[in-house]
Length: 122
Image (cartoon, rainbow, N blue to C red; front, side):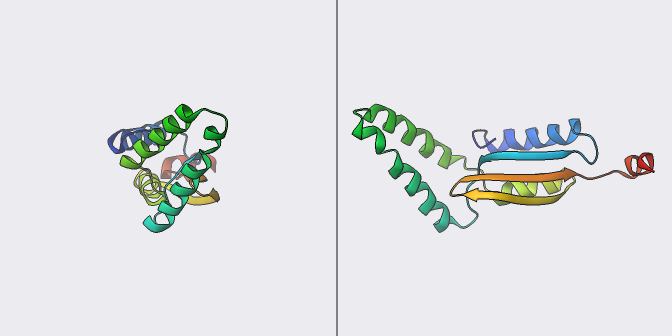
């Protein structure tokens, strides 16, 4: 999801909400930017620094390509708050961050029950 432009993400979350049954579980394991810009910047630099391993193996080309990819993502970065907003706007509930290490994160949410689906469960 983090590679999509913001408008595409909005369309995607609408589609996820459309096809997921009421009460269904959504889980996203993806790169999510920290909401705190300074914290995000620290994480980004830590990841970019690890790409130096390619230099030690004579593959600066791979380091440069990964750096370009991450820096391109910065122009369309996907934040925790943006994902939370999309989920809440599409009537998901119980949005939870289960894991985070730097930019890697796992988030879950449940699609809310409509009155009709709640009645069907009775």
